[in-house]
Length: 421
Ligand SMILES: *Cc1c(COP(=O)(O)O)cnc(C)c1O
Image (tube, rainbow, N blue to C red; front, side, top):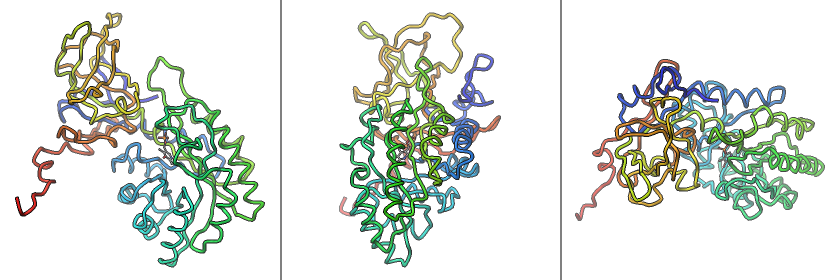
């Protein structure tokens, strides 16, 4: 559910007409709904009610300061995967004890910054990383709270580029080696082993792979406790999928996910952390674009938009589907026709959809990509020297630009000319 609906024939973001935002900021732009972000966060929070828990937003999905602040004020923690994200979380006012640090390649500098600024835990992904963190912690005279990310070798049944829990993926340590790795961690005086971490992939549309993974985590918790480890926290990762189109079957709801967690892990008495990204932000954002030209090709018509793959790379990178709808509500019963919907970038991959059925559209019309709030703006680039597009946050009747479009001069002035030129 989201707050992007047609009212009086015009697409609205909460109570603001999308066309009004377009007139104020120009196209293309991203727009997010505060009510949708908060609703999704609360669904997870409520799904885990009764268990000691923390919902850590996986901020790589959407990391604008205003979005982070919105969620942090509602009580969210953050899952960060770089020193930059850690700094962003802190800047948005998230206390260190609500930040977990994930990722396979944490550097010395990143570890140091997080230990100095405060951290809930590091989710470690290898033994070399464990040794490194131990050294950094000892050099600062502190103990670093850690979990080890185990790779449960389950098939998440999602797109290969976002599956992370099979043994061939680079993530975590094989669960079969967990006992040795935990024994190693326990010998390192700079580490405090607090729990277990697992994250099997993204855009999962079935609870079964989660259930299989969590069952393995439950068994591992018992085995590690028997070895004398004080396992008291389980970080269960993110990955719950969202409906990218209304015609498909809906993925499981946070409430059912929470029930499954209680069933599989509730008896262990552990504190539970989850790291949802896409489900919180995905359907809370639109990408709004202008139709520059309608071009008739041989046997097909192209809609050429002013948004491109550099603004939203998911279709090019993951063959992702986004529903694309006109901002002016089409008359009911209007006949749809197929369009190839493309951007202006000089790449064949700059194609958002092929033979997509749409109501008739003309140059100058606005269209909106639904479900663009996660892995949208954060993955954008300035390829073709197309400025990063603005981000706008709506809250009821109000809207604000939360990241402005840079000017060409700002872009050019980021480069510096060596003195010999
Ligand atoms: C990407 C990622 C997430 C978030 O995944 P979503 O599918 O957006 O929920 C959570 N945890 C880790 C470790 C990740 O890499």
